[in-house]
Length: 269
Image (cartoon, rainbow, N blue to C red; front, side):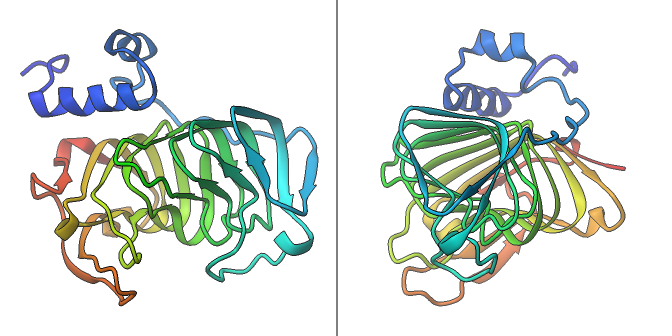
């Protein structure tokens, strides 16, 4: 197979990503979103600061103009407690773009249905960078560009149903990049695509999924940098539950069913 040809499985993954981002197959090729593995974009310099004392609710498109938003008042605790309110709460179909979340970032961003996070940066992840909570199997959450660092636990918490696509993203100094909720009271089958992402150690794992609920994770064009990168888990499989107990880890690595990637999809330096 030449470098320009793709297996049927990879063509399906590319098509799924294009659909998630609202692009045609031609648009994917034109924009080199999937076929070009480029260097990570530099972190932006915020264009001003904005203290947020109450969650900003978004419907439609919210363009932050690359200002730094940070929690203040009730959103200014900066801790890791579960159940914090977010800086931004996105309604179904909303788009959040050109935003820098500073510290404290509370619980980051909540997507209550399908959403797009475009060029969103987390300087110091609070409880989680973003949580995806849609209840429809047709929900699609697209993270395009941006980055996150200093996440002591999770970057993206996938509690809801549907598909999460992360592309052109960068992450550094983190616990887990994406975790499918292991013990939510309502569980779903979840699909995850992580493509064209720069990962800088230290980090514990890229993706954690619940194989007993039929979760899948596809990894493509993952570039891992820094000492200790080879010790990072790429895809962990858990036995999830809906009773609040700690989920049991049952395996890791590619299995062709739930964790979908090969050694050629991962590079180290």
